Length: 78
Image (tube, rainbow, N blue to C red; front, side, top):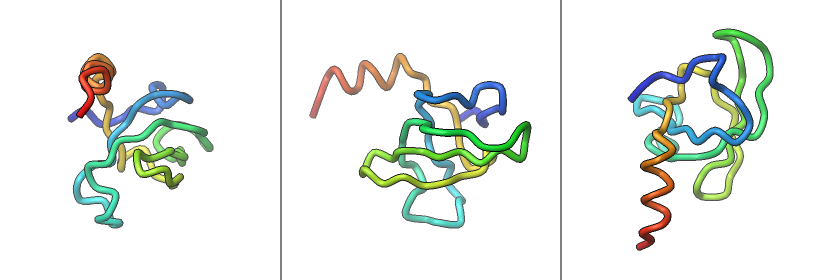
C-alpha cells in the first residue's frame, strides 16, 4: 500500500485506513475523502467509511487505493 500524499488528498478519492491505526476498528476499511483541512503533512482528512460513518484521520493513517481495482470489485458485486 502506498501512503497517501498531501497533493493527492482531494474530495472523492478512495482511500484505505492503514493497519496499526490507533483506532483498530477502522484498520483496513475503505472510504471516500469528503473534506481536507490544513496543508502538507499536517492535513486532517475527513473520510466517509464503508460502514457509513465519517471519521477524521491524518495523512499518515491513510493509503491510496487503486481506483480501477475498487471499481471492478464493486461492479462484480457479492
